[in-house]
Length: 441
Image (cartoon, rainbow, N blue to C red; front, side, top):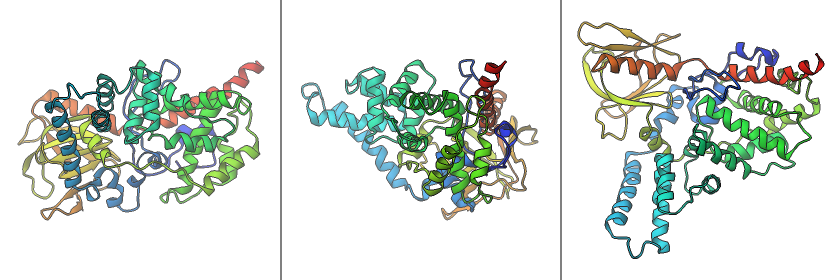
């Protein structure tokens, strides 16, 4: 997000940052705000999600999705092998008489954590089935809050799910944080360190709503309502990236930050000294965002938005090759075989469009094409196994059936649609400003 000096009412018109981070549809939000949940395209959010994803060179830009240069195949195989070996040893080794021994419970807990990192829902179910967690929101929240051996991206995904139990876990999780007498920046630092914000707009909305309610509950004399706290929290997050993201050239001044937050306190302005202190805190020390561990790649491939076989046309040579595609995290990965641990290529869905296309040689075709540049920024492995930048102007694929083609087009479009955060924040700011207007009329 780049500050333009305009008032907050113009958030829906602000454009800035670079790249795209993942936001996918998650449904409406209780009738309170009408948010179109689709793919985010804002550089400010990339620093919260995947710090390595927006850099000056493309190789660095794709690093978070492609972490394969750092996370070797051996490491991934060892991780999977360890889980399988432990499960086989425990399930086949007969835990009947000794099931309650501490060593066996510790092994089960270790397996449960690894299952959670690969699939949060199944991990929690496993721990509950083995009596390592009680099926209460408070116990699950305590487990996530301690976070021992847990991937913080997986924690964020679980807390953001729109199910009654998950939402109760989220509320219990937030209540474990003590924000008493903390300025808003300090509270945000503590909160954002305990998990990684997920990519879906509605998930983030629910989390920040709970944060704002908790902060105002513990600090009742700072803001007139939770909407003010919510809006200002997002303004601080955007300020953090605007000040510390190297791709943002024009750094906002303190006066611009103050101007962006006019009228959000029940139609009135927040004290200048408060906004100055928030600005200086972020300028001096950026947010520390928890790093993803090796399980993050596994979590990506084990929880795809869509996967399946497609025929892919080559770039230089127009031959067709069958590839296994995985769509997740606003990237399209393709593999030679389903058993491969490393993808042959990655196509970040940034400034990309998708369309149905007719081809003389293959049926049920669609293609990705660059929306505003000559080449699609993507990477692949060459014949020597080196990661190189692709030079495609289009990526053309062929599905097995017309229904499969339509489903792929639908899923890809959900990952590359426009950024809903500007709409979300603009709606919330208008709500915060209307309160004072209604009270005067």
